[in-house]
Image 1 (cartoon, rainbow, N blue to C red):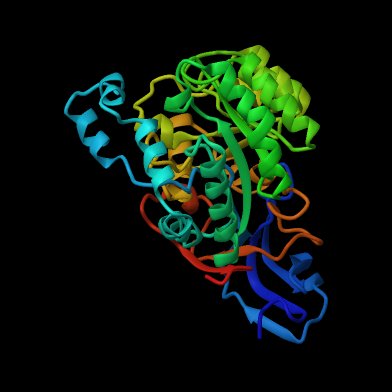
Image 2: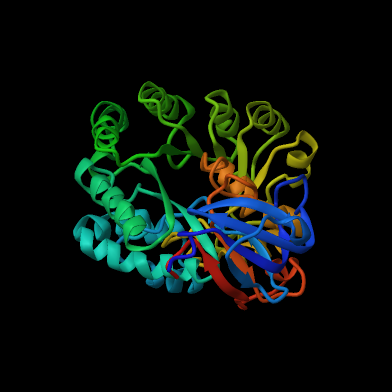
Length: 400
């Protein structure tokens, strides 16, 4: 019988509820679930009775982890480019030879939907194996209507193939496709007038994202995309301040965006704007590491302004070929100096908020979906401290 079919007491546990300003630790804790929902989270002595009882044997329980920024669906890979960079080739030289994002666009356009699903499932399974119960998946490697549709359909299928929550983000404003290299305005027209309305009408889009950067799209161009998304009632996200300060975070905040992501070049005004709007800062240490960046996100400014911080893998073929959220947490602590609490809240409570899922996931609390993880650890810090070690015992609310 499925755990969600009747009232179940998960006893003899230690809880990290993630429901307070900190981790909300409860020794001698218990959860009670019914019909796929948590109905109690607290001290076992106060738990209501239940016919089915599961002895957690003293294990720690956290909410299911949430990877709130990924590009899991794509064709091909860029391992050869990795070799070329190690041999001294510059990104510009690789791009001139047909590499970079252009090569991923070509491979994604050439792949069938079935092929995209099959390759992405391997990456998704790696995340699920580490306790991930929800994942955001972006388009953005198709850059034409048919290919973006194919990517988003593949992402939807992943949510049916595995018992994991999938949120899709339309990232048509990721890069200029080769055929529009000298026709920027025409491509933005295509995004606004054709691609986004059509894909949203098909129910394929949960949020709209963009890349605001000197090598991508300007504030004005992103503003046009965001205006179109707002007309369709879709929430917003933005890749901002990764390589330079273009004021993208402040722009995202002005639209009430769910999150602004990367943020290495974020300034004080941008942090203040995000705090005022309630926009989450999604930090992506995998890309920082892979690109060997030296300017870390201004974590102290985010703390000072009270901006919620999420952590994600940014799993993608070029700049963050990372499919371990636990490793991303270690990177965030080591490279960005986040605390253990900040890392774990960043992959649960604040990651849920970055996807608009805070009513469903991210904390252990009555009314939330019964998606949580039992861990073979002695203290929550182990989830951040260890590298290349997976202590997941069981992910509840998933078929894994």
